[in-house]
Amino acid sequence: MDRLIELDSLFLEAALETLYIVALTLGIGGTGGLLLGTLLYTTRAGGITPNRAVHVGLNLVVNFFRPIPFVIFIAAAQPLARLVVGIGIGNRAIIFALSLAATFGISRIVEQNLVSVDPGVIEASRAMGAGRLRTILTVLLPEALGPLVLGYTFVLVAIVDMTAIAGVVGGGGLGAFALTYGYRQFDPVVTWAAVLVIIAFVQLVQFGGNRLARRAMRR
Amino acid sequence: MPTTSTRTGPTAEPLIRLSDVSRTFPAASRRGTPVHALDHVDLDVAQGEVLGVVGYSGAGKSTLLRLVNALDRPTSGSVSVAGREVSALSERDLREVRRDIGMIFQQFNLFTSRTVWGNIAYPLQVAGVPKDQHRARISELLHFVGLADKAHTHVEQLSGGQKQRVGIARALATSPRILLADEPTSALDPQTTSEVLALLRRVNEELGLTVVLITHEMEVVRSLAHRVAVMEAGRVVEIGDTYDVFADPQHPATQRFVSTLVEKGPPPRALERLRERHPGRMVTLSFRDEHASPADVFAAFIERGVAFELVHGGVEDVRGRTFGHLTFTLTGDDAAVAAALAHVATLAEVTETHPTEAR
Image (cartoon, rainbow over all chains, first blue to last red; front, side, top):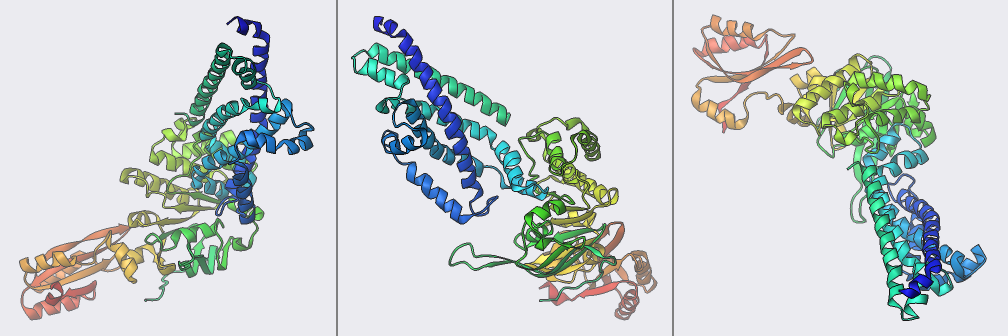
C-alpha cells in the first residue's frame, strides 16, 4: 500500500496515458473502420455501389489481418510503424498498431450493423432521387446509429484491453504500469490498483455507450 | 393461352409507356434457371388515370413498378416517362426524373431515425428546396394527410395507417406528377385500408396525380382504379376499364381475381345443394348498367306465368356504375319458360346451368 502511495504520480500518468492511447486509437481506427466497413457493405452484390472486385479484395485484406494475435501484430507491424510514424517503439508505435488492428476489427462490426438496416429505406431514398453518397450519409448511417454506438462501445472496451500489452514495445499506460511495478516487483496491491482503475474505466464506457445507444434508438 | 385483350386505350399521349419490356433475373444458383420477371410487356398509362396492376406474387408487378422510376432496368425494351426514356438515363440524370415520381411502399419504408417532420423534409432536402420553404410545405402536407398533430412524433410511435399516410405525404413533398404505390394497403387492417384508399383517391382527384398501383386485393382496384391490368407469369394478360373487367372478365386469371369479389353464378358446391332444393331450369342473368334493370326481367317472367326464384347472386358497384349476376330457377310451362328466356336474352346476358354441370 505504501508502495502505491510512492508511485502516486506514475500511476496517474499511466492512467492518463491509457486514456490518451485509447482516445487516439478510437479516433483513427474508428474512422478507418467506419470507412472500410461502409465500403464492405456498399460494394456487396445488390448494395448501393456494388463492385465485386473491390468487395472481394477488401474482404481478403480484412480476413488476412484480423486473425493475427495482437501481441504478434505489434511486432509484425513494427517495420511499417517506422515507415509511417517514424518510430517502432513507444506510444506512437503502439497507437499506430492499435489503430490498424482496430480498423480491421471495427470494419466488420460496422458491416454487420449496416446489413441489419432495412433495404426498403435505402430504396425509398433512391426513389426520392438521393445520390449514393447522400443516401449513405443521411439514411444508411443514421438508421444504424443505435447498433453502431453499441458496436463502438464494445470496440472501446476491447481497445482498453489491447493497450495493456503496450509495454512490449515500450509503450505506457496502466497495463505497462501493472506489469512493471506490480507483477515484476511482486506487489499485488499495485497490480490490483491498476486492474480496478481499468474496471472502473470500462464500466463508465459501457454505461455511457448504453445510454447513447438508447437515445439513438429511442427505446 | 388467351391473348391480351385491350378494350379501352388512353386517348392522349401516354405519361408512362412501356414498350416491349422484358426483365430477366440471372439464375440464383449455378443449376437454377433465369427468372423472366417481365416477358415482352407493352403498357401505357395516361396522364391523370389510376391504373391498378393485379397479379399473384411472382407475376412481375413489383418489377414492372420499379422500372417506371428506374430503380431497376429492363433487360430489353424501353420505358419512358413524359417522353423521356428513363431506361436509358444515367443514375445522375435519374435523380431529377425521380423527383417527379413519388413512391409508397407496403412496409412504408419510413426513416426510423427521423420524426414525421424529418421524413417529409428529406425529399425536400434532396431536391434542394430552400430551408425557409420547408415549414409551409410540410405543414400543408401534414394537413392534407390529416396528421398535423403528429409532426414531431417519431415514426415507431405511429399506427400502420398513420405510417402509410406519412409515406404518402413524403411521396408528395416535391409535388410529383406520378405516384407509384407498391401494395400500399397490404399491411393494413380493413378499416385503415379504406382510410388510405380514400386519401389516395384525393391524391388523384384533387392533386391530379397519375397513380400506378400494384395490389393483389381486388377491393383496392374496385375502389380506386380507372383501369386494371392483370399480370400472370410476367405478362399482362388482360387490361381494360375496371368496370368492364369486373363485369365481364375474359382471361382465367382475371376471372379468378374477380371471383374473389363477385361470383358469376353459384360455386359448384352450392350448386349441388341448390339443385336438390329447387326444381326447374337454372339460369344466371348478367346485368350491366346500360342494359335493362332486373325489374324488367321480373316483369317478363310474370307476364308469361313463369314462377321464378332468386337463388344466388348480387349487385356490385364499381366506381359508381353497377353490374350484377343473378341466378334464378324457373318453373312453369316449358314453352312459356322458353319464350320468357328468349325475351330476357334481349335484356341481359343469359347463362344457363344445365343439371349435368352440378355433378
